[in-house]
Length: 155
Image (cartoon, rainbow, N blue to C red; front, side, top):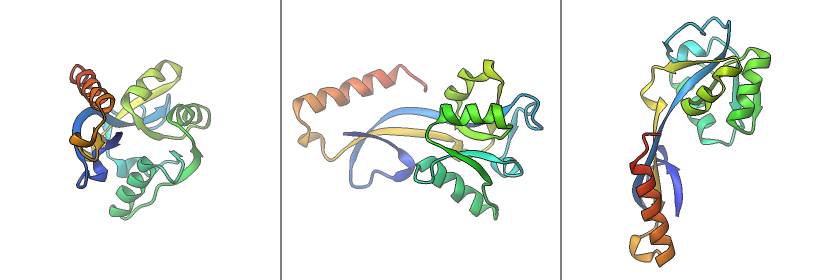
């Protein structure tokens, strides 16, 4: 049983819808983009980014999006998680693509949240497994619990 971003595709697996989130651009207060309600990812590439480590799915997706626009992500720092990225944003005046929920928690600490005007910024996650028939009773109950818990959430 796993929770996966549906961008990877679940072709060989069974899946159930789980949660949704939105990627946004986190910028420090006073940054040139801080007063904008939304920007394209291409616009953000004019600025230095804080990224997650190169092996992460988010980093791979951002590099592909940049390459498809004929650009590159100028990563000034690579960190291990989104909270660390936000700390670097504030201290070093860089920008970072992070989930909205994470960025909004840091808004009181000098981070501004700017919507990314990109369809890929809206992510869906699924609970995936080989076969419902192959799940143990405990595994089946876990999947049911996760699906039920996600039904009441728009995250």
